[in-house]
Image (tube, rainbow, N blue to C red; front, side):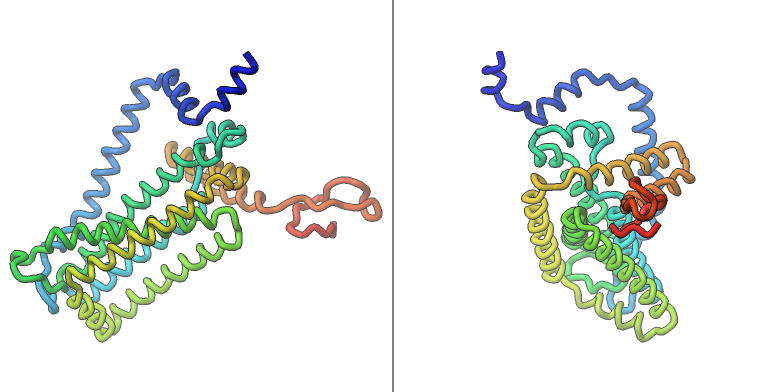
Length: 325
């Protein structure tokens, strides 16, 4: 029996997950609560985005349609950029690569292939980034809609479907590339700090741009004037560059998955699980515990020598290995 087990090799991750899925019986109220949450989220998002998407029907040249204020378009574009930067910073704070608590405590520490274990959460991260980026890309097009110069035969005050598709592809590609770049930087704290700082700088720059467009008409008219120079070729070039960036970062992440540190994934999974728990039960004070836990996870106990306090850990965690208790 031992010889046959060795010859068969270690079990595959797909077989283990299939075994668990066959024996997991979720009650009906779990499906009901999940479906209710999804429907409620869709209704709220549609109510929030219906008015901005309505600007897609108001494209009408350089001066805008319907008396649209150029400062409003600049502020909307800055809001889209700031939202993208904020989502990336939030993903960096939580992971962005994370497992479920059970997989992080069990499958991650087994001698299974690390790439097979992390392939599903990496694909989920990329999928969420693609969906969010597609919405942000179309939303950015909606902000510029009243100031776009439509091609001949596109219809009165209607953005062509080609532009919508290319904008969605461009936004999805660039946002997925940025999210996967965060996955690449996840094992290195310095790079994570740099990415967070870059996201904060982009958010501040977007805010400054929105304020400048509101106060000075020269800035807002220059920005909206650049919108009129966009055409199908420009959108196509942006989409191709976005897809190339997303594919390049995806290949780098795929090569990195077999060597991804387990402790980094476990820490990110713990933070993500706690945030989801707080969101599910509307327990906002639990987020302060997450911040405190993240603060102490980055520190370690310094060791006191016998000359000062005797053998044993110091009374305060320090980042330095030198004991100064």
